[in-house]
Length: 381
Image 1 (tube, one colour):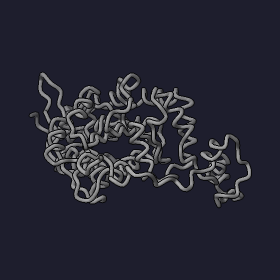
Image 2 (cartoon, helix red, strand yellow):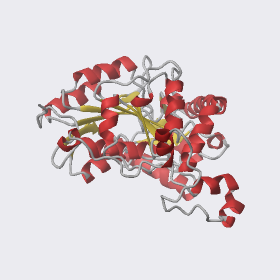
Image 3 (cartoon, helix red, strand yellow):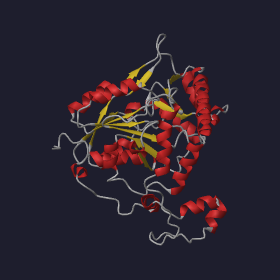
Image 4 (spheres, helix red, strand yellow):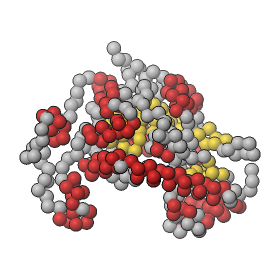
């Protein structure tokens, strides 16, 4: 019998149903084994001429826009399964990593229960958890400053996350790996050790949005992990942030429960088509990742040449650590006044760092002058 303490999902999800009342045309065609060219059952605007949309954005987009998408994301999941060497049943596609975060929280945490995260990591997790009525327990980062012998570090503290999960009887532990905003990468072995150290009823919410920028991305582990939701996205390496497309890797039994609370048509037909197309032509994304990493290293070297402390990064951004939150805020405001947007985490624990996306444009001479000056004016530790 599943008890309140031993369960990982909300109790009602272990019962039969609910079942999607509108599985969609694609699912029905797969079930019947033939196409349905005469579609009068979904009340879509299939005869909308879309002259304006076709003229501005193209007939292909206009055609995709008329019909509901494939709620099962069948084709994309097939391609991902081959790409990652895992089963289709281990995959769930949704409208970006944020939707997947919300889905995991919605299915596992109820009012008054606890979620453990790092103080200053990707803040949307805490936003969703608090909206669900959960209490968010924050664990400080492990922080070390560079010296003659060692690089600096700003990393989620895995042992502290596990300890907090036990102390607070947590339902979810959140880890971004590579981390946002520090860029730190924990090894797969370290993540598995964290997973094994969590309470039985606690799930690991493993945000791998920046997975593609790991040096070992091609060989890194992508298999489902016990009681773990692995989240990935098409927003970064594939450049589809505006279309909202992401996927989860998890145990098939967990995927089946999550499907009971998933919004069926959250992923648009154009988003699915774009994902399918890019997975069919992987060389473009691979070349983009290579280019981003090359720019990342050039930008890091450039700022280090001024004396800046640039933390190691396995992402498409770099993290610069300044001496104080006040200095970081001043630099950010000076850059904003010139139309240059960089990120300063809103959490007070990480107010002293600045995060910069590694775009080629960031290397234009003069683009980051205020940051360069601030680094030069900062006294050595």
